Length: 458
Ligand code: FCB
Image 1 (cartoon, protein in one colour):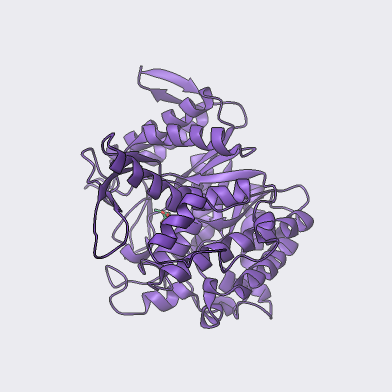
Image 2: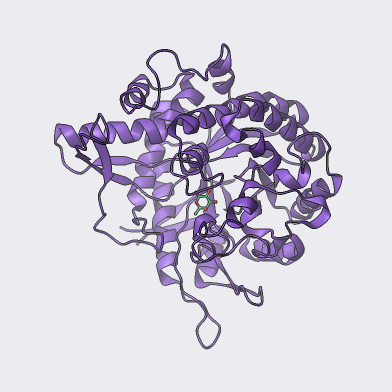
């Protein structure tokens, strides 16, 4: 093993999101979100659970901040729940909801931990869904009002704003595959939703800059580096198609002000779009989406290996089929592939030139729990972390302007449609008692942070 040292000022952090940890859905005037609604629908969450208690972070946040201090992080990425701030989605402000985040921000700063605030991590107020949700252009206007309200209150102290978490998941998992809220299966709506999410990002950036003048503003994308299963032209074509719909559909408008033409044509061939100009794009939209940002947040979990398969009657085009990967898988069934992170960061740097990049999420679900002595020996997570941090060090050596890394997640938590069955935390949560137990990976990450260095393979 050799030691890779990180640059001074490299930001070490962990990430969470409101719905996954807070609980307290009716407290202090919070309104209903689309995830409350989905979780209350029988059959939608694997273990039949919901977010009513989650990690009870809404009450136990001082204890969780104590964990952050013990870990030694310089930053904490969390999200604000829109339905706490604007229970109706827009209109009357719920000051008590904002108070919660105000206290959290102050307590973080007292501990010298920088708050990195995600405005939208999937918990849309249900009243906005009732008026069309992200499929409706008006929701983009509502988001700007929400971003304005939050940044007016917190903008004097927050230095890192993220508009959206993972637009691909919002659009595709929520509106095309139906696994996430609002649970729709409508590819045309998914494309509209993606556009309105991006548009709301573009419109919110200048508002955040105005209300929070010293802050950096960015967006978080989940990116998946694709590789063809073989050098055959058909597999390369499947890879191009996957990349177009998954990665470039978001990177291109943000950094180049245009949706990728080849990916548009793929959607036309699939019958998701009519030929001609994109029906949901109005004059000025793409310029707004491509307005300058200070950083890109990259969430990395895995790569995709693609093979072409012709399904003539179902679709008028070959379909990209992810291959079952041969290597080690986490409990999500996601391949452990640290090299993909280094390659992805280099590609994003070369092709899109964001001023700075943060890895805003990276982590692994493993079920390891306490032994008889109460220790959680999650050796696979320790190795996962080491491998991916070495990949970050490699990306820095490649010249990537990587400014920080956030492990997903601080705590085991509500993993969306999987409920509580997948544990990503550095800290074990006993869902019966809500007791928190740091795992071996917690100590190992704490050591990386204090040394500002990680071991790499020779
Ligand atoms: C990401 C989400 C995050 C968490 C991880 C495992 O897609 O942003 O909330 O669910 O996956």
